[in-house]
Structures are given as structure tokens and as C-alpha cells.
Amino acid sequence: MELRHLRYFVAVAEELHFGRAARRLHISQPPLSMTIRALEEEIGVQLLSRSRTHVELTEAGRVFLREARLTLEQAGRATRIAQCVREGLHGSFRLGYSPSVDLGVLPELLRDLLEREPGLEMCPRALSATEQIVALRERAIEAGFLRLPLERGDDEGLTVRAVYEEPLLLALSEKHPLAKLPRIPFRKLLEERIIIFRRSVAPRAYDDIISRSRELGSPLRIAYEPDALQTGISLAAGGLGIALVPESASVMTRAGLAFRKLVAPEIVLQMGFAHRRDDNSAMLGVVNAAVDRLSSRRAGRARRKQSSKESARG
Image (cartoon, rainbow, N blue to C red; front, side):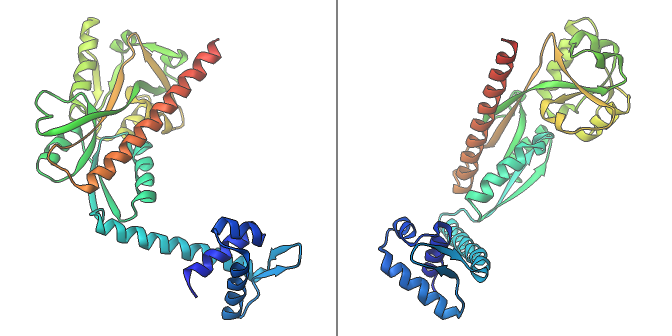
């Protein structure tokens, strides 16, 4: 039995018509019919019930179709992996990522790469922006997702580009008086206990938030700087303060938790992708292309979301 026999059978089973299957396979109908008969004789089972005007799968044919598809898929995967090895795309790729990336962006990127480059093993590591800079320079990771902008000098020897933006939201208990407001002005935070990410997660974004509070006449009353985004969300749900979180965190629902938009001013967080400037590996090229696709998809979703909001207002 050859893979060609399985491909021919799958085409007939999906089309349920020898003529259409032959056209799909770019062959004439007689050799296709002969191949299917030879396949049935080889395995000793009738796979198709056919008449002059009708073709349908037998019970054995339906089971064989499922297994034939799996065999062809695995054969294709084996071919792609061999090609990956030839092209230098086989091995592990160590990817750093900041908190919140794992809430949607990381799974989306990994799915894309798994489908396109099965020989590439992604090894994600949760690291703050500061830790990623160090890890990149020490060659402990190949690339990373980190919050922008970087501090002065941190981009030395690195290529850094923006991937997507998202607004900063407020997470708070539904029982908090401010939860009654759909939008909460920044000034209202000056009187509250604040839960914020550690400075090492996003130094420049952290400093920008602190400086905005001082411009309004008072520093933020920071109650907690948890290591994990999930911890900050839980503290906010428990009424222990108001957490400043990226919009992507809004998928982390908790009983008694509310998310509200921060305004006056709105603060937008930017996620970037960084790698060493001297890295010209094929693996990095593949990951870079996947990041480009991810960035394009997110930009498209953002445009559609904005268009939907404008239509609703109109």
C-alpha cells in the first residue's frame, strides 16, 4: 500500500464521485477506479459501495477514511520536520514573556508556529522586562515579549519593535463605590489603595503612571506590588485595593470583580518584541514572521472593534 493509494481513496470518499475526484487529483478516471479496486483487494475489505449513479462509503470505508487521513497527516508532518532540519528550523527556541502575554498572545503565537513549523520546539519563560534584557544579553533566551518603552541604554545590541497596544484598566471589587462609574478618572485613584505591577515588569510604564499622579498633586498610595498579575486581580476582587492591569487581564474573571476603563488620562501600554541584533538564525526568522502575523491580526481586530463602537454611537 502506498500513500498515493490513500490520497486517491480520500479524494473519492470526500467527493463521493469518481469523476470529480479524478479532476481534483488531475488524473483520468479509469486509473483512479483501478487503484481503489486494487486497494480494496489488498486489504480484503469493500470500502465503497458504488452503482452506475451513486457512490457511498461502507461502514468499513468510514473507519478507513478516518485512519487514512491520520496517516496522511502524519506523513506530511514527518516530511515537514525533515525539511525543518534541512533548513535549520529544528530545535528549541527560548522565548521570554512578560505577565499578561500568556493570557492570549502567547497561545496564539505558539499555535501558529506549531502548525507551520512542527520541528521548532518553543520554550517560553515568564520574565520581567528587566530580566529579559539580562537574559538576552547572556544568551539565556533568543527573544522576548516585554513592555515598552525600554529604559535608556537597555536596547543596546538589541532589535526592539512594537507589536501591539492595549489600554490600562482598573480592576476593583463590585462593592467599591467607584465600580458604579463606567469610566474612572485618574484623579479618583489618588485617594485609593493601589495595586500595581512591580517596576521591573515595565520600568518606563511604571514611572509614567507615578509621574502622572504627581502631576495631579499627590503620589499614588501603593498598597501592593504583587509578583503575579493573577495575585493583583485576586487582591482587587477581595476589596484590598484597585489594581492597574492591562486590558488583556479582563479575561480573568473572579466572583465580585469588576473592570473599569481608566480615563483623564487614558494610559496605553505597549508590548514589544526584542532579540539580539546579531542573531541571524533561521529559527528567529520564522518566529519574527509569526510575530508579524500576530501583530497584523491584533491590529485588524482593534480596527473592527473601534469601527463597531463608532457604529453603535452613530
